[in-house]
Length: 234
Image (cartoon, rainbow, N blue to C red; front, side, top):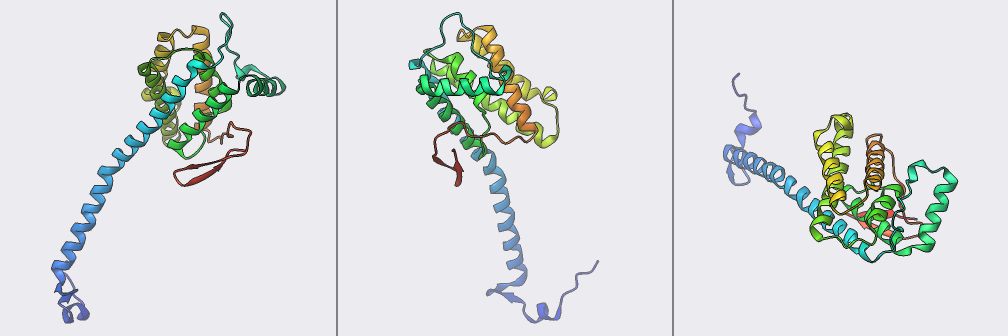
């Protein structure tokens, strides 16, 4: 098809002081290079953001070494099996009698939220993760593996939501759960407690897939700025 040139174009062979064709070529190359730079930078930004969140979660988990631990031989309570009144009582007990654990639970949920601009760790998941690790002197390497596995599972849940894929059909999600199981057992978490953590993580993941909005853990009014987003954690 022949190129049709308008009268205005023929009358103005120069644009911004340069030949029109040259100007058009420079603009198109610049736009292409900008798009390429954005595409190349996006994975690096996501990777750096993930690394920062994992570092914060790792610090949260290592700080559990000085927290009051569950009595030896007593399994952690699974919030998923409690009715509404018993769950409210458990929350009040944690807040009133183990404020250190409550504070780390709040930080854990808020730090994970920085990656997704929303809360993705419900109270029950934060409680069981911190409770089974309370009082343990976690090596930094093990805490990093735990944090990485949790974030990988949450990432997998969001991917399943975007692609309408069942969690059980996601190899990335299943791999994250396997890594989490193995790491929990390696730091001497009882198998029964490990199963409670996995059950709560799977439940939270299903809620992410179903687009459930999680409430902030904190019951005290405060505001957090997450990537420019104001989150009211009352």
